[in-house]
Length: 516
Ligand code: NDP
Image 1 (cartoon, rainbow, N blue to C red):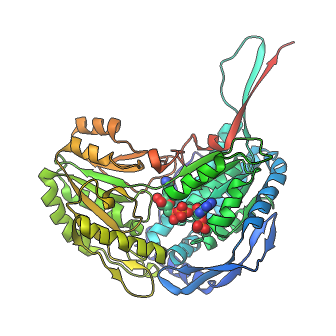
Image 2 (image 1 turned 30 degrees about the vertical axis):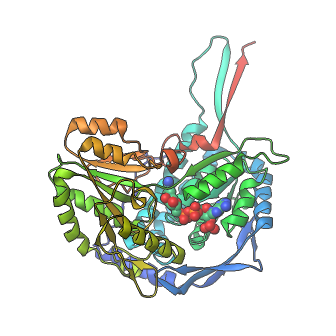
Image 3 (image 1 turned 135 degrees about the vertical axis):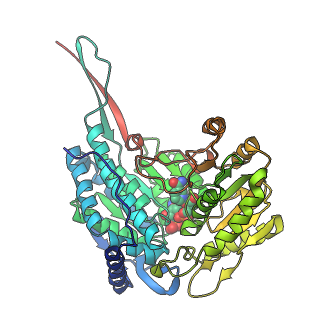
């Protein structure tokens, strides 16, 4: 019997011992950078002719590692192996599968600092952001293991006289897991271990900006006792290798988290039945957002609202799907809000993640260029309050940037920028703020700052987002506390870290036996 699930505590880096352990982990990981890594199919390590490098976005001369550029052939082979090994893995008792996750959680807990340090180097997270990602990963392991123990007992049914009835949950087949780089351990691990613990085999194709963290996860699962051939680790471009995995007739399901463009493409490709395919592919696609914070005139602590807006907009450089990129402020308090915001943003420092600055680099050059283009668009559409410049140096640094008096229909108020750019929009009143909030194609996260219960009640009904928060920031969802997933073009609302999640990786079989 396992103790009830509880969330992994975050590390307090103000405590000397924790700070020292993180510094040691950073030194250790830095000494391991620059190695070459294989792809792994059926437990076999393979090296290919084509390769690519992962680099530190804060210091582009620092190579994190060299990785194999798998193509169509390797993608296909990985799916075939996952199909071949499905029977054996799915027949392992569910309790055994759950215990592998529990062991992985224990190993990860012991190496928390090291796993966090890899994120500091590979994706430019500051210490707290990296630590938060690792804590979330531990939570997924602990939570999904417990969830499988619950589902393994079967579903409850209405008894019928003269019959013995059961509802059992079965795994579905090979699952392609395609994660983004921005929560390089938590999201990758969450989708993969949900599939595995449910009894499915997996082809994991990590994002090309975070393959080293994916490799660390593979090794973690191996150490925790995952049999060879259950999980395939295949690095390479989404457009070739990824497409081959998604379109393969033996792929049963695709668990994707990433941009709207790629999610829709995957959904379209997966919907086409290939020769030899005997099922309808299941697709989970969790996608982008244009998340918001409404600040109402009936919230007296404007300074607290400003702090929440800054944390939501600029935490991890605005590169969270939940990042609050729109502040929608009711006009009575608009000027006060903007004046406090313009003072407080000056306190945000940008620097090397290794040295634990609040803000670090954006992920890569094309992302930097895209964000700078949006900043130019913003200058045409509204008024620049703060920032707006690239910070030249060894990596891809951009100032925290705020535009004010942004029209709700402006591109910078409608399109996901995925960088440190905040649009401040004036609303006539609370109803107008809700209308503006709901005016994009997305529906992921949204916060409402007000003390008026009627307005809160209205927002609960009308604010069309998958994750709504009241009087707090719109980032930082916790496993089984705030199950996560969005509406409309933000995705399929799969609610990762929630109690319905494993069902998406299983199918229910109803069995009825007549007494004779
Ligand atoms: P992308 O959509 O660019 O990439 C996501 C994954 O898809 C990567 O592994 C990528 O591989 C792969 N991929 C790319 N093309 C294909 C293809 N044709 N077939 C199969 N796979 C493919 O997203 P990012 O990694 O840039 O992540 C940022 C986005 O993710 C943002 O829009 C953000 O909002 C969203 N996101 C959503 C979350 C949610 O829960 N709703 C959570 C976190 C992020 P490669 O890297 O090789 O191109």
